[in-house]
Image (cartoon, rainbow, N blue to C red; front, side, top):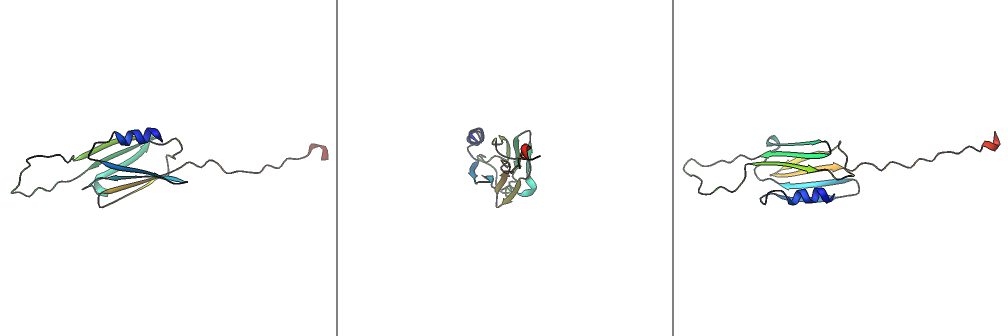
Length: 121
């Protein structure tokens, strides 16, 4: 998970992100003001999360930019934690906040194996 934490620190200063962990999943929360479900794409491939987002800016016709510091695009490529599953994730956007839930891989369930006594046969 340290690689993911490091990658989050490398995001632009204008992007705020939280990483949460439970017993069975990771939750990545990223503030992306102006982004909607139609303007963000999230893919998981080769143990990496790729987030591409763009925001629309409505500028009233009587105004012009004096300074423009709010980026229109986010293109992030983040590593999955080692125990995260590549499948089964989900995402939602609400008021410009992207929540990406990535399940952890199961560690396998314990199975009892009966041992036959060879002397009884």
